Length: 99
Image 1 (tube, rainbow, N blue to C red):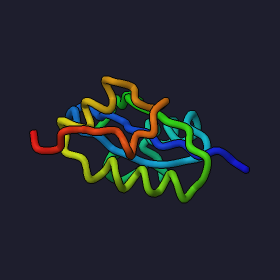
Image 2 (cartoon, rainbow, N blue to C red):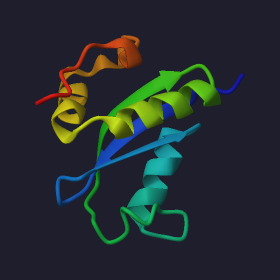
Image 3 (spheres, rainbow, N blue to C red):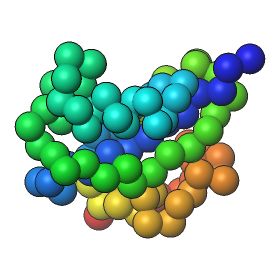
Image 4 (cartoon, one colour):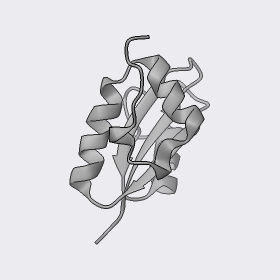
């Protein structure tokens, strides 16, 4: 079974972009190139920094985590990135979303 990754990229405006893929290095290079496979949200906003990555077991789990992360406010995304919670079951990690 092919492993999937969830990742967070930060652009020059300090905005976060969350995505999923099967190959982090390839996908990050596509984003950095601003070519046809770059996410529209990242085009022209480089330099980009890979701030977070987490390996998951399935495409389904990656999609669920992507949705969960995208629903977090910026403060909790920063906590996620800074605490490197990729070894924990991050969807169950208690983050204070009220701040």
